[in-house]
Length: 138
Image (cartoon, rainbow, N blue to C red):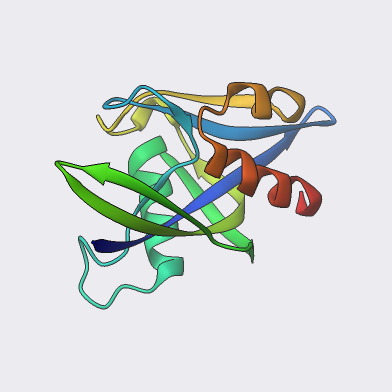
């Protein structure tokens, strides 16, 4: 068994009296998710907050400013025959600029969705669980 720790963000923006949430479609498994990545895989000693901000920008092209941390989610998955327990630390972030057209190749699509459409679009239970928490803070 292996343990992994990731961090990511649920980014929002307000436009014309509406709230939009950043979601992305992963190039590998093609699921709609919130952006996240492994803590410390690029920068040794990187804090979870730093990872979250970096991963959001790399994967989506959007700069996020942390507002509040929400309760982490933990789930199990199998990778190449090995069982992995993954904990993901998520942060509610407000949009601080950037361009969704400048996302990296890890995401095949990045969109701003109206708040009411997010739960229907998300693929995985873990993302839906953090969305339930995040929506209360946005």
